[in-house]
Image (tube, rainbow, N blue to C red; front, side):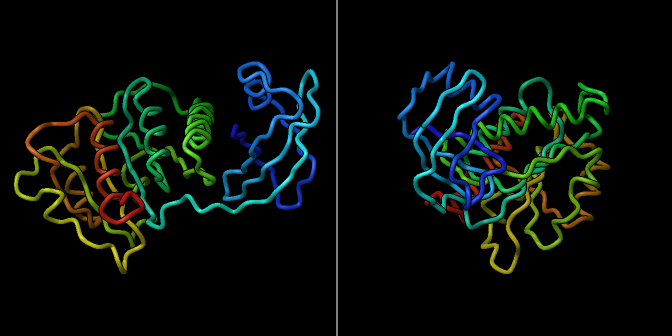
Length: 245
């Protein structure tokens, strides 16, 4: 069934207008016609099924049929904190992390991040990232969108995770591997995972992270790209303690 994101969808919605990008996808890409059965969701857990009742030039109207509260979210809170990466790598991370059920995703300007946009373009970047998360949620069936944040530095990025188990992937860690420190996060409010940018962490960042309670770990003898490391550790954590059983 085709899924469409409607931010202001509520339990009381009866006839819903679909406009903007979602309407274009419905009418131009999928070429749906009146009578088609569709699913609408608001990114906050609510999902409705309905029938495409009217197709206009600039919008469609869906007649709501049934209300659903489907539980497709992981019970484990996961926070992925990644140093800004170049090009479309951030969008790749958002797409795959959304599919894997991440709760929160924060990008931060690390010491070795390569600048791409100035501060004035932060809003447009966040809007683009949110759209990537919406498309990924539509594809994988999630009903709740992950929270996406752009932080000015690592110190700002790691705020609010005091009660979470904290892991830092560091390529220079030679003793502790992820499997050695992975533990049941019972008693903690989930797992926070800190990843550096393409150039890796500086010594100052490593020390700051350790001071904030992060335990440095390695995924093995090979140095992974930032985007590979981010998705890999999230998948491992979900398999160990989340809903990928």
